Image (cartoon, rainbow, N blue to C red; front, side, top):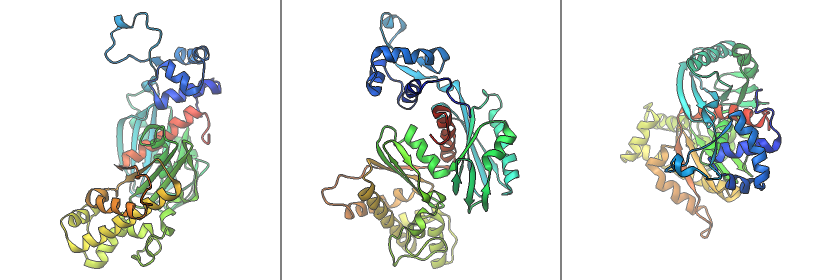
Length: 382
């Protein structure tokens, strides 16, 4: 895997600090890393000479005004590298190109007509060629999959794709010649939000995703905590209401049965015989339609209970709600917040709850961040 070499651990720490938190003045950078100005000058010299870092222009300061100024902010040269990220769903592959700061510069979607691993790898290779046309050669590829992933290389199990023990990274590397990292899609999204999004700079941070399944990511000490629930089985056994609905996926009254888009659609279909899109169910609830209001109200109370339980036990500084299903907050956000308060100690600090409706390109961007991290850290597991 290509990395920032040759860099010493100290030089790498400087580069990472500027990448995630920059642009930073030399004084601020030295303070953050507990370095003397002399040590910082020595460490930044090779980074500036290599073109990885550069002195950033200060807003509102002319070149003439800068004459004699001893320091300008340091920043990474974001366009010096490009990365590809792919999110694989049951019927589509969503791809993006990002720069070194994970800013998306191009998007491409292709239908997935077969789940044969070799055919999927060929499709990813073709998309890599299309996305790379007319741009600097990509540095690496990140792939996000709903399922259990081992060693950031092998899809151990994916119910959506019907895969078991598929060496996806090797298959794509063979066809593209690029380094590839594969990870559970929720884990990838958590990494992206930790480095470049809602969790940047936070010590304790949680991501809770609602969509086809329930995803959960916990960050402690600024690092994601790996857990067995990253195979999307996380919410199937988290019982919110033991007398709640029974759906084909998840235990009775589980987070999955109450909150996921397929389960909400199933409840409406079972009660009315109508197979409605999720957006129409939300609109019906907003308009006061009785059945939609009941199902969405139960989902909102379930979400509030889940958020409160997470806040009570993990004590995060922020909880990010993400995924295709968080439109629930637009319709029943007050119910969610009231339920959170009801399940918290009266004097507990309010939960910092942020909502981000994530499309599939956001998930693909998360996968690209995996490739950025491998470049920066020098090893997939570091």
